Length: 103
Image (cartoon, rainbow, N blue to C red; front, side, top):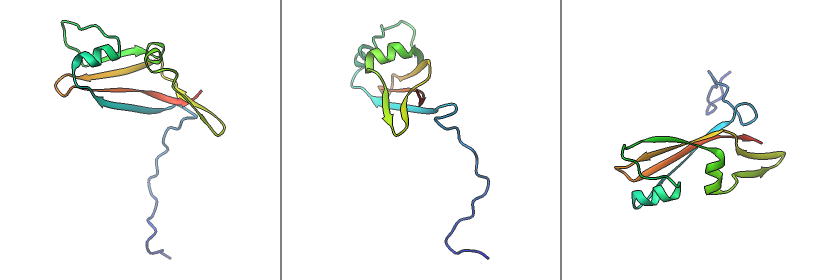
C-alpha cells in the first residue's frame, strides 16, 4: 500500500549531534575597511598576506565575551580549542568558525 503525498525515507544518514562530537558553526560578515578587521581581532598588519588563521578560544572570548547559552537540560557553548578566522581582502569579508556542543 502506498500513501499519496508521503515521501519514502531511504538512505537516512546519522548526523553528528551536539551530545557526541559537536556541531560546526560559522559566522560571516563584511567590514568597510581592512583596518576595521585588524582592530576587531587585534591583529597586526603583516607584510605577507594571509587567508586563514587560528586563534585560541580564550583570545576569541576576550573579544566577544563568553559564548554560552542555556537550553532546557544544560548549556551550549563553543567546545573547539581553536577558532578559525578566514579573511578575504578583495571582498573585505571574513568568516569565523568552530565547534559548539554541550558544556
